[in-house]
Image (cartoon, helix red, strand yellow):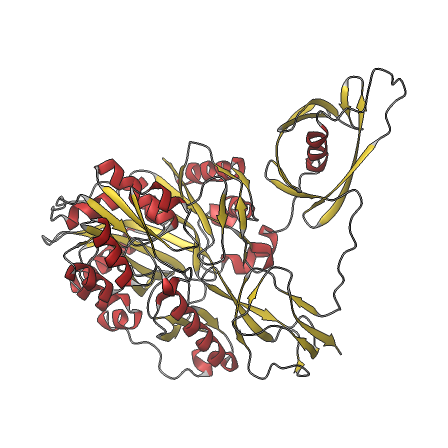
Length: 613
């Protein structure tokens, strides 16, 4: 029997594994980098072991340090979570060689399937050789790992070498393996996968399908089970292929076989030899705890001959600290408050007051809804996200709500190009026009200007806020009866709640303020000072860092004085395990280049100046 499990991961998945272990009466050991010293996963575990450093290569990718941590803390098993070393056969062997139980598939199965190139060969599919114009578009893909890292769509042959280099660099940083390959890019396909679970006694379960077509940067955003609109024949074919792949490598434990589905044709992509981020939707539909099943299988228990029956529909949305309207730029800062309605499941690695840093993935949480039908599950999840309280960095919450309610998605007609087609409409700001007034009234609570001597009416008070990139000025007055504003009736106003009556309809606004940042319901505002300081001016064509990160590469030939064209890649920033390309804003000459490879930058820092021609 397993008595203590070290979780070789961080954040949400480490917290999720720890939760199941507690329910099973198993003690947990967390590992944490210096950047994660106060992270939630390190706080909820029974024991935590420090991995010196902050970069993944120095910490969560150091299998030797993790094995030492497990032995030092008295763990008798290791759960790899997903990402990092979860698909690393050498790590699995090191765990076993140390006398620990590996809660995962055999190293031989990992070797056979963790490399996407070898997996395709096993399934009789060869990657592309030398790419020609006739092969375009193609997908550059990292052979190891997942999560969309090391993936690039190439539509011009001239871009291939640069995208190969970028993919290799990203793959090395995320997985420690720079092998990449190219394959045909299927336009208009759906990303469908099958959850498998296998024991050591020869039983393999196919636990239904999942649709993960809504993706950004080839990383999943919304997932659901079962995949809608598939015929019984196609579903059966996918199940059979998934079981075939698992049996081909003697698979044990939980894994996922991924496909692209175009019409009635299936294209094998890869097998992920680990738990997937989207596993909760399968858990909800089949009524199983996949982590508990992983542990049972690792202890040698046999699965039932047949899997449990599916019931209902489940949808999961990944809540990211990122700005979809600005090239999905990751965001950092203090998460002051995160709360969602109890009607949905919340898996998160953060809690109120935690800091979101630059070193790791920007996913804050997964929100999951389960209901008897797909339409009910979509409505339930959209409502929960809309009502969620999220006070902190910019998130993709509005995008998620609008995606779930988009007609194309609601009708099950989506594919992997959904955001390419609809991103502008899904990110268009729709601010609440009464949010600035509510923010001003909440701030004014308890600041009455009246004393016993005053009889004259108060002069209007003025406050200014920035909302959705635009400045808004609001006016209100202190009266004998309280606060007042033109065009509305102020029913109630205090620091946390404002109730306004507009045309006979009462509206409630919950308000939170942290410094100059104000949150009114789902609307974020920035309070402007009464006497603003002079704003720093930047020359036309200035390139400012859109996010905190590290300059990992400067394009060949990009030096001061070089001629550049609008949209030309100039440099790459790495933030939260992803590389972000910075391009020339205009056509002209690069008059100034401040950025240096290896430099740490903060948002708004001047990187370069392109003098327009």
